[in-house]
Picture 1: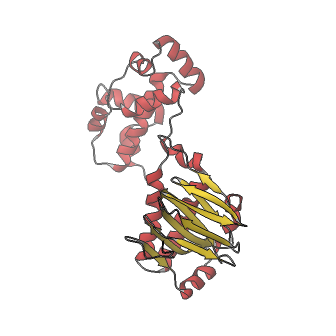
Picture 2: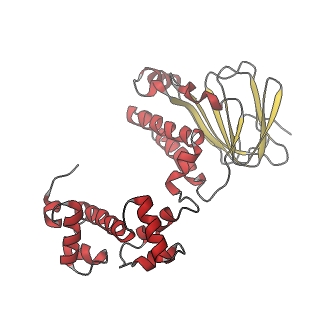
Picture 3: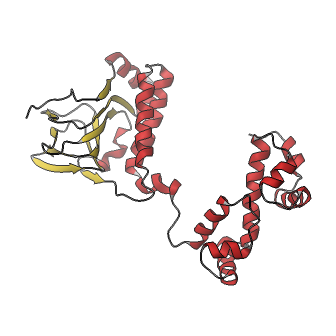
Length: 293
């Protein structure tokens, strides 16, 4: 099989010019962490890279399909789908696609004064386990955001923005549980499950029985547990969520107060205003007139 560094169907890559790398080294934001090379190699048959003296930058390789391997200190390590590794700058290495099922990879070369904050992850393979909250596509979207901004040119705004995205992108590998938190409802936590149910039904007039049934508890038992853990009765908490949404609608929509009351399942505008005043300390109309932000 022919070995090659690049030249794969549908590949894409950007290598920043030396003059741009110098700007990145000098800028007060980008000097801390920045990209020098970035690319995607899909189904990279024959991919093979050997660097006798290592790379000047750290290299992140994220495998999304197929298989490959890397070798450091004559220790060969297999890499499969949903795994990644970061090779430390200056470390001699080899990496390559497997012959039978060649990998598809997203890769980034990065450096900077603070790039070693990720050094606990260097030179070993890591697995991103599958879960309902895995956010695989969100991570790829972050990569594409970096790539597309660099593709639009090397203005200082683009360079600074891609650096900020790079922190987030690397953080999605280093802090996987935190990256997933946005989509997470703790399994078995009936309070979180009940709150999630409330948030999805803000337009309704839910009863205690409705909320308790959503987590398969009796109303009396559920009410006791909810108040003990949250400090509020379920219905009071539901009203807080409604008023939180009402504040957003007052701030960012042109809906009239009556329309907001109707959209959030209040009996009438008077009932809405009474609950709003109790929780916020002023009427909806007074709240709407205030400058915020």
